[in-house]
Image (cartoon, rainbow, N blue to C red):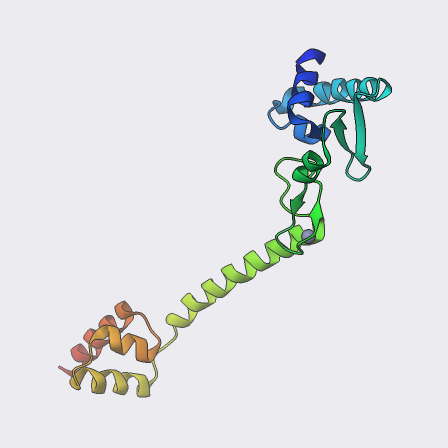
Length: 168
Ligand SMILES: [Zn+2]
């Protein structure tokens, strides 16, 4: 990647970080390209063609960039609602804390789902078995019985077959 190509990218994007400029650069040459970008930014800043609009993370804008362009570069954190400048194109959250919060929530939801599956495999009590036979005799469908007992339809059918087998 030549300096000319990097400068073209900067002019197209108007607002950028070193990370967002390098989003499509293969990892093997990233360190090399990063150094080139850094020296180009330093050079263009001296000429007044690029300015730094944020310190943390370092965000830069070309002379042509408007306040609107800069604002459009910001993102809204889905966890806390803060507006922030992403340092990478893939950055979704404003901070490590919000990213962690997101994964905690995600894993909690997964654990809850897993927990429901465990509950459905819970042993049947004598009362539940009696209730199943009673409801079936009253003409309820397996689906309706499953809803009442808080079990899957499949589990109710299997249980009913097993109970009938035992009675024979
Ligand atoms: Zn946040």
